[in-house]
Image 1: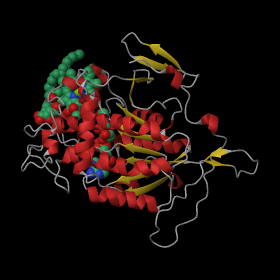
Image 2: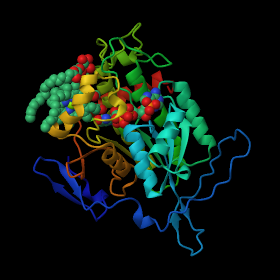
Image 3: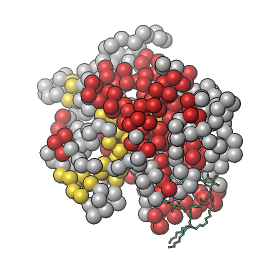
Image 4: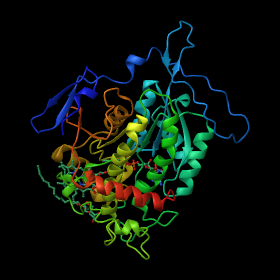
Length: 387
Ligand code: LMG
Ligand code: NDP
Ligand code: PMR
């Protein structure tokens, strides 16, 4: 895929590596050209328990500094599943810049608070808000709570996920969808559809909606060919409600397989990002992105896997595939997708090479099938009650 160099800042050059990958070099970080200081706008505390949402959005540029210089206000980013692994590392990386306030959207409030403290994110840089993606009711409540906080929304990171590779039988979300696809795809689909309205209202200069993808959902890679392989088929199981009663618990209508359900959910994530791009980018200017941050073999994602796997997987990835990346490094990569001024191109699936240089990666045929993306969008909006 050719890079649209015209859309990129002039400081960036595009190199083609020996392996055919395009790599961005001399990448500049953050919004530095726009930033002269990092003072956050002071907001009035909320009065009363509930306040109807108004369209009062803090201006993105604050001219109230004593020396008359313009400053960009702190960005507000929602990160789902920020209580561990990649989400926590990203929250830390963004908080450390002093330019972001992180809304940690987590199912376990206490765990999230402890996690923020354990990595040294300071109080003024984060807020924990409850979100259980396996309940659409909880997703709607989260959106209400966020709106009542009065904060504008500048970036949304759909990061949370569950992986149930050893499950023999399917389990279900509150509304009765198979748990992996229900959480990883449908929960995030509803969240993103609702919050796009908030992103639209923000006057922040670079607004972004990110959905974390993975190599394991891409069958154009070796990792994506480790069985069971992702395959959404004709979406007959999803259209039937994924409930395992009158339809299959799997998107393609097949037998339940927990590892496949996870990989299928990642294909849905990558397709959804592209469909958002097609439907909303031109109208809103929002940047829609997905990414594979590298193999973060030590995270909680593998908590349900057999113990031997959990022991062998990290050295296997470190020394054999060389696909391993630390939580800290992966967090920096996702933080780049949130705030680096060079990663503004929309509709891109980002990956990194071994020197941690980002490049636009190719998705598999299925994960870039525009017709499937449209169908997935339409079936999903029915399931989450938007159509
Ligand atoms: C299945 O589990 C589930 O049963 C199924 O339901 C589904 O969920 C599926 O994909 C999901 O998973 C299978 C899983 C569990 O095992 C595997 O799939 C095996 C691959 C595990 C990957 C780790 C391989 C570890 C390789 C060892 C490397 C050690 C690194 C040392 C580095 C030192 C270097 C200086 O089963 C297990 O977890 C059991 C794992 C048993 C591993 C058996 C070894 C396989 C060897 C293949 C590796 C090739 C090594 C090449 C060596 C080159 C040497 C240079
Ligand atoms: P972790 O298990 O460490 O983090 C997942 C997060 O999701 C946790 O905070 C977890 O909450 C949260 N979560 C799970 N279920 C729900 C739910 N119902 N509602 C709200 N939050 C929930 O895994 P990773 O950090 O590895 O995974 C993060 C993302 O990275 C995922 O999208 C994954 O697919 C992706 N990814 C990971 C790779 C890897 O190698 N690890 C590779 C490629 C992609 P809690 O803390 O309460 O359990
Ligand atoms: Mg995989 C060649 C490189 C490579 C990479 C980058 C990954 C990433 N894996 C690779 C190769 C292999 N893996 C090979 C050759 C095997 C067979 C031995 C293998 C096996 C394997 C298993 C059993 N790999 C796995 C599993 C899992 O259970 C993980 C998974 O599929 O989770 C859905 C996994 C992963 N390998 C990766 C990555 C990034 C994962 C997990 C994370 C994810 O997609 O979120």
